[in-house]
Length: 611
Image 1 (cartoon, helix red, strand yellow):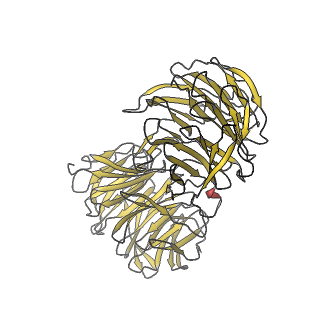
Image 2 (image 1 turned 45 degrees about the vertical axis):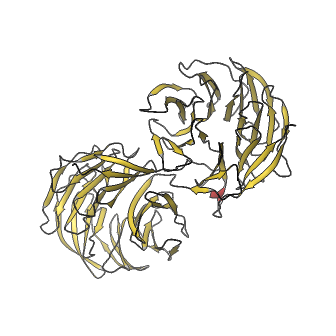
Image 3 (image 1 turned 90 degrees about the vertical axis):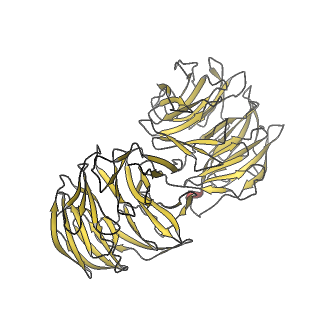
């Protein structure tokens, strides 16, 4: 058995030049947002309290709790809306293909009976409203000629719907059944977001023309604007109202978030500007916001989520981030008597996590290049991407010192420190092995076969290189050279992962044909075989600190843990560990395993002693 201890969640998917949507649970402090094919629910008061819904077949775009708190409606880029239970087994209530393209916004009616969506109708229908249980249309939504970026339901009767989009138009509909009432052309650029106040008396539209315009909620007539003397200096991407309908929060590409007092005459006066965390780049642009209870939530382009107190907005916020893209590597280190988890993703992000605490910061590098593979020790980090360069970084608690990158001439597929001589590192490429001494190439060995994986023993005396042909080549490391000792043949597919046990008495290997093998290092005989329980290629391996357990992570989304002293059939399987596949594994303690995968999340599992 394996119990999930915690999920270190991904952040919302973002796109430059577009706002994103996060919404709140009317019954709790939970928020909901989308990343990849997943819908993520997490509590503002306890950000590590996370649950994930992964039943969409396509990339998700928006999700919202129903006003009664019982259901969630989520939508994706294919135009599909899924309505599922908020609690328990999250049973699917209904599923409808509502638009012919991407859905950009979705909103429930206040009685939780109707849903309106807007998005890209591919030249046909850009907005639809329907009954939540039957999918029956409840109106006609003419008046837009381009993608509709935002829509909203008036939260009080009589019901109204407002929409806005890339045609610079805001439309107002009365119903149900809903019919076009009037258009407003007050904006001169994309209208990115429109939101009704909780009491239904007003709604605000915000635009890339840097304007915020306030309208009467019932008639749709224009009332006023946010003060132009104090307004944002960049595109405004999102707006959210306070619970008492007297204030509003806006965020902008100018990297600021502003709180506005909405006056009785329908104009907006600046109340304060929030001091949002900045790193100095375009990633600081703010593209999403939510006013939820006493929480003011902002989201940056780089995925930084900041939570301010509405009652004390000048108080420094609680901020956390994470990965936005698939995690491709993971390592557990002991730093200052504290277990630290390091993860990397293809977009060049390196994140430090602290078990039990969560997000511990990002490691910033001189060149924010893509990362294909990495290797870590307590004090150093090696990374490489698709530019044939290997970066060597010195790590500590507060900063990252980086030497000039080494161009090895080929694209690395594995990196390893040679611990008996810390300034040496082994780099495997598709055609051979390169030994680095510091930031210089010490030797290059063309192996004459296609290399797919490699490993270096903990004592630094030996290396194993796996090939496309399924063979394992064992080399003795002498100074900065390799000498082939033997070749092992057992696998029937390309080698995908190799890992020595911590005491170096064994090693494990895995292949693309979904098989893993544990070998005795001294005799070079198979110690544990028939590890053939995955249904797709194995991507990663990990050993427990006591050399007793070996774990495999696969494209089939599962993690399987084996006891090397027992038959492979007495395994522990963690099903559905990561949506899209498992790409990183490491043991943090003897019975605690950390996994990461395509869903951009990290999970910590506790294995029971009953095996």
